[in-house]
Image (cartoon, rainbow over all chains, first blue to last red; front, side, top):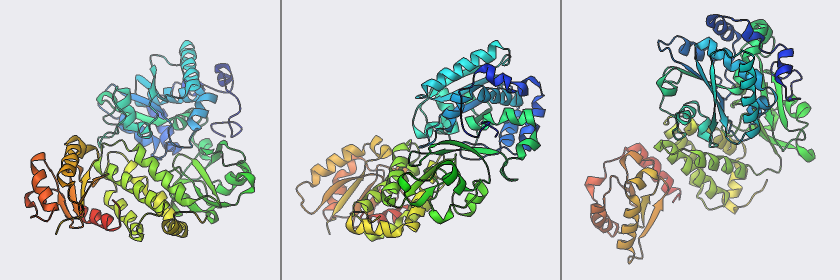
Length: 406
Length: 107
């Protein structure tokens, strides 16, 4: 595969091991910024942090800026519930991430880079700082300055502009856009923020070429993606699979199905902000286009599977409460929406609401759509509305009896 | 007709503009009236126009309320006239959304 030779993380690679397997060859090719940008653009690589924005496009905005000082930020804030792929990548292949960061800096003409690292990732901190020292000593970083900045573990702190606020020493609050960070970013300068996994794809692309990269995945979504399976599975972990692989294969062959032989009821294919899909959608392909066609999203690749006995009202309420808690509070619409949705679901769960509440969810979500600096305001809608559509009986039973019939 | 509920928004914006004090003062003023209940509300979504207070089931929305307005609002709650100057702060669609939620029992 592209990120892990065996498709799963195996060993904690050393600097020597990385170099022996072709590491830093991409950087040593000494390609011009334009040549790197061209490779990455034609590879069709899209961001792996959840939004799926074309990487070449983001880079070229910064590269074409008239401002001479520019920054690249490696976003390892990773605070999406259930996601641990960035941690796994840095723990196992820190030099792959670092080489990707250095290539990104060369492509966009940045002299300074930041690794914005989840503050609880102690071992990663150790791995990445050692790697920076090793790469510098070997002369791979040239004049590039790489600093590590600790990311607070609140959900919005992983949003790209909130990350820039934190690096500037301010509270983790998303900025109003436009301007986008690639134009006006860190300290007002053009800044490219890429997810860890996105950057880890860069050295293999530059080293092996576009057609090699495109031999993985689908024409619309080339390459692979790391998928995180949680503790409800027989084999939890991070699995690298080409886009277009069947979700059933991930669920059955890699994850080994749900524990204790439990029957699958539904799944969330892209973290807490995506729409639930029922068990009979398991044959969908793992790529953004296919997921979109069946009404959900792939997000950053966090998969959650729910057994027959799971209470979908409780699961949905938990998601709504999560967004209410993680709302940073600066946008009125988001504050109102997240607190309302959570209060309404609590009512239904405990059998204290009026059936008229059911009709209000869509209205609140429609009313507030897009009214925020970041996209958090849009996040509770898909899981809540899909759960209420797919499991309406469970919601009605809860509302009537305050208990579960699942 | 006296209202049943005086709902005082207690979300960040309204609170930073003194809705905590408004809640306290209205509760104090109306505590002897057994028919009227003064309650905190999580958020009406009219944050820019806060502090917001909604009288229910009359569905009268007061925004930009100051301590000087407390007396008149309390009088309205007990059946007095509507304080018209405070009713124009937020758009009708937001009002309707919130009134529907209140009708659905969300308070």
